[in-house]
Length: 484
Ligand code: IFM
Image (cartoon, rainbow, N blue to C red; front, side, top):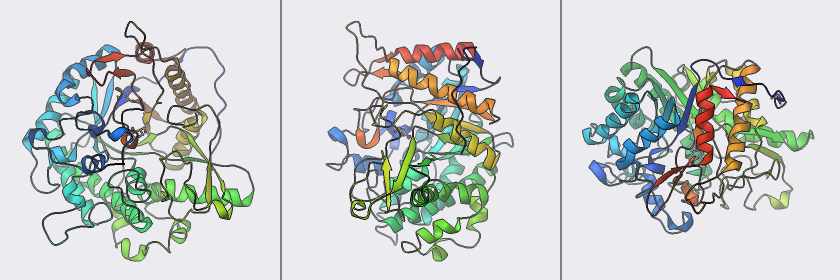
């Protein structure tokens, strides 16, 4: 990957006409109302209610009550001037058991939300799966299999495609851009590998099986969306591709980087965008899974159905080296939570390092050059139009006595990363939009509510929303259509 030097010009940098300035959220992180209107538990409801899984014992039961306050939230988006909004559909709201017909009450919420967005001139972008698998598909209570479902089971991919069809049939007249999966790496490797995400399983073979079935689910869902949507609709996927940097040019560190690139990136981009799993990935993981049995004839054709847009979620680069033998068993500092089980099957011999000490509240190093690199490398390798489907930062915000929140670190992070997007566009990448993570402070998965990513503060006692100074800054960028 080529490092793009930061832009040193002070002139105004405009984004291309029609560039989407958005924010992103996910259903379980903001909606609350988990038992409302027929919604059933997802794996995240079960996981977050399991003692010891989430910091502070937090759950998404109430989250920020977006389910009831969505009109107020859309008004706020309109006040900020957002041109687009990326949200996720809760599968257990739309198809409560993960099978069978859609729940009209569940769909009504998304009909109302998208109507409200459109009425305010905000383009909705819907993600089908942001991690909230119906619990009934993880541990079926009926049917032949009483346990051992979830993404390691092939059937889940087919259920996902059915759900995609139901969602598209109901909302296809309002939503023109669809994202199949959000960060399937997290679903597979944090959910079934390290176990720091729901459903909290820790089997490297299952993690790889989950990855393949997420790929298959994506491909089947692309087919289902195309069948249900008008030809003008855009179909995409959001990948948290790891910008992997070897700590040195030594062969062992290059080998560490190759392994992480294989199981962090190419495990998804290979089948989805090239119709193949790379030989080195298959070899690295052959002792963990029987790929010949796992991948059926025709799967790769299904998975590589063409998409229109590639979504990139970027937060920080990943620096790796070969690990000395005696450190291989220690919990790793790879920024993905603490577990003695690895989310990197086939890469036990890799050590993770911080790229620098300029850290967000997540402990993630701040390095916008990684965003330009990733966009350019995706552009060169796949030639697809791109969106930044997530980018943002958690910081410990301080509320002033008058209730305002001044968050210059977040503004600086966003400014530098938007410049990195502009750098990539200048260098030839076709980037169509930027979705800031996140609109509101919300439930940050295993970290609970302690980590605040929002440009709008949520008081968790009163649920009152207060735009932070970063929100006012972003509104100004949108108003001008560019950066100074
Ligand atoms: O909050 C998450 C989001 O759900 C997926 N991408 C990363 C964000 C920050 O951790």
